[in-house]
Image 1 (cartoon, rainbow, N blue to C red):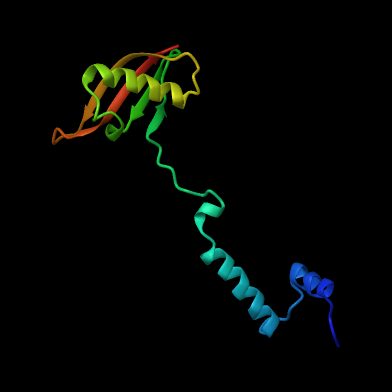
Image 2: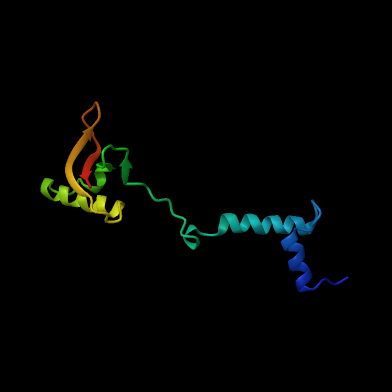
Length: 120
């Protein structure tokens, strides 16, 4: 009994294989191969760390936590400008004005990040 291409595709799509058969095993191997051998770049599924995070705030002002690696290479004057650029990029340019940028340290006086405060 010869099954045409359409019949094979129908059986694959509807999963009409009895468990333990060669067809079932072949489909499982194809699925696992697709899952584990397809590079991430095909789906653009790259993990993206959140470097600028919006924190809860009150009365219309915004608070943002900025990772230290994003601002450490800048001088203090340039650091404010870069922080404002990062905040504007995070808020998609919605008129946020940076009013302060404070460094956050832990108990061992290691820099953990920056707290950027904005006004509407």
